[in-house]
Picture 1 (cartoon, rainbow, N blue to C red):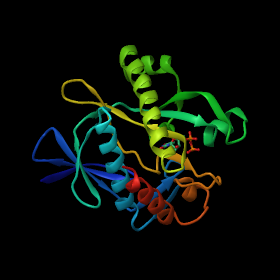
Picture 2 (picture 1 turned 90 degrees about the vertical axis):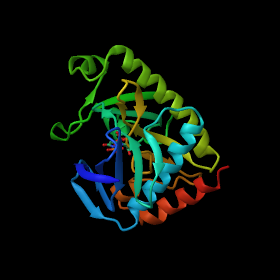
Picture 3 (picture 1 turned 180 degrees about the vertical axis):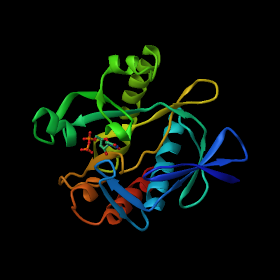
Picture 4 (picture 1 turned 30 degrees about the vertical axis):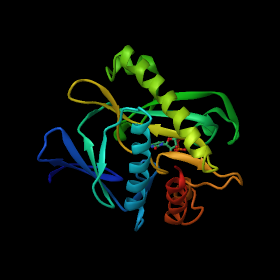
Length: 235
Ligand code: UDP
């Protein structure tokens, strides 16, 4: 089914398939942070992120959110619809943390009255710069109409995910999404949703996400196993 390797990313390899509208994403045992500045092999991470991401995409699809997910093929492989990725990292924040706290000089852990959506230009050479809607127009990344849809969809996804994680006692602090155009020009949620691209805090303030790796707080796979086990309990 999978044929040529078409893209090798930090966390996933993407393969073409015999169907030109489908790709296979292979989740890798590699953890990176700081735009690749910190990089380590983490055995078992590919499986965990594939299982977590597949489970979340399935729940999203059931809730009527349009994603690229077709099905999980194996422990580390997922079959996805082929999309043209929009080079935007769409970040939504419910609680202050990470670069937001640094940039604005505010402590981590402050609940935002209205969740904030941010855009970053997905470009490793430029270190993914922080941009606004006018930069999106200048760079011709998406039309104003498509950007408005992406923003509204991100808030809708947040409502769904915040509730999902609340059911397992976790606070969804922030997350990053990527969207793409399918062959008909429809916008689909793409990439992955895993503890690699969100922040999850438990009631005691423990981090159950990639900050464990970024900040050297403990064993990444142990923490991701906990997230997977909790998600598997949700009906
Ligand atoms: N994020 C991501 N990929 C990136 C940058 C950020 O998935 O290249 C996620 C990150 O895991 C967090 C959210 O986006 O859940 C906000 O990240 P932030 O801007 O605070 O940056 P960081 O502190 O991770 O550098």
